[in-house]
Length: 630
Image 1: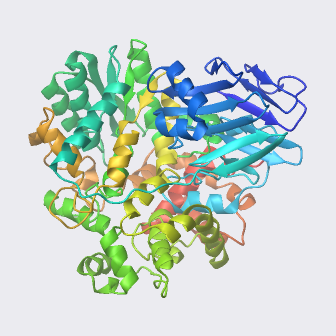
Image 2: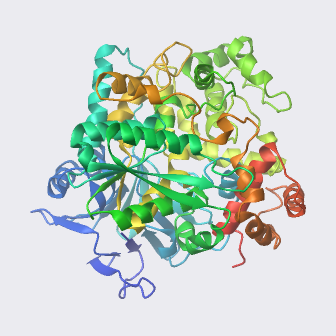
Image 3: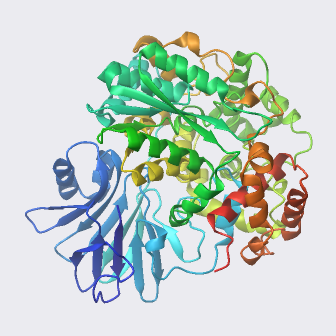
């Protein structure tokens, strides 16, 4: 699915570089080109609507909503992953994506005009200078990708959440649709059933009578989707896929707990489970190079892309051609701010590990925000306990006297740090210089967090978190790659936890429903649904979670990748060129520190802690081609 819009430049024919695109609309102000996947609808007044992606429902009915109510109202009503291009009889044109920004649109504007496209490789005048704050984010924050409105290139941007691009009179303008946060509700048992109804409906409308496939990790999210699919469509129309992954000889299969539980869950429901063997002792770099054009076209760099590509290729090879493919991504963030992995505190008692996740979530919740604002945060026993486990870390002092300043501190700690902990200082990320840290925070806080910091209250804090997630982790390399790898194989990827009603429910869900220190479990409404509304094997959700680190706290997946897999010599070869020095500004990045990490890696010395994460980011982005000579 490709779209190219050129505005303000006399369109003298289809762009010669865009092989396979056909002209969809032409005027003296702009030209719209696309492939055969883009549909066109017209109304009686002469307007045209071009749609790429997929609505949940009937396309023609969705088009009527946009024609009658307009772009802004239409995108709030329509579910799915899509973009809309509305051309009016007066010659104006409006462009937007779905309200969660699941579909990407890139644009570049200069003195000649504006070009907008579905991937950055379609921008014909791509700038050659790298955007340093965007690189800083990719190197310092999990996800290895710039935030939503940024790209790695100066001058090239992405259409952000709640933005509409309008072309009128040959000029392009972008306007923001004001976000309306929800207040925390007084939820009762009635709301538990409402959540269950929303989840089942979200899966029903995304499912297929021809068959459904689940990427099965064996955790709560993917197994919940599986249970709902079996209830809705029957076991005969559901199957699953999981991976058996090896990184090194010394560790063997690193996710045996996961595959064993996935097999047990599949057997419980009587469905077929395909296990794909992925051996990164012998493969990986060749696939990484083959996928480099895809990574560059969408600004992503993550080894998880390779596993997802293997899954998608296997499903496509065994599919009947009209199955829906499901993944449980974004559920962790939506339900528990991402603290649902049993990793906050290692302990042999898993119930305590779950409660430690709740404690981490509590530190970003409304109660703790209130303590920041009234100056009593340091007296909080939970804060003292978790902070005491970080004795060598640097922390910022809280803002003085400003409620917006306190909120900004919390939001910035959450979205703009590698380690998410209140007041965690960016000075812990040594890849950045002092000036670089200031420039990075100024750019990102102003672009993404300023309005939330000024307007968020303890009643609307969760709503703001979930809205901002769409500009950060939920559009990062590990999430977007699920869509891209599936679509490359002709598959339809579905992420039901991105359903609008579920998002609205969780945006107003109170702290006591699994996000705070009350005794309700993490993902409380999801687990209630599994207990009361579907058949679910709770007895199988016991024991280690998935990987070796569940029983060996010193085990590091990142170290396995960097030091003992087939990627190790490949990454060392790439980093030996020191091409990052041609891209990273010495005013923003501490190149001597980065050189030191690379030197120790070349020597075979295992780096630890934050340096290990920095090294992984550097390797992945180098392999993706961001630090290659141009």
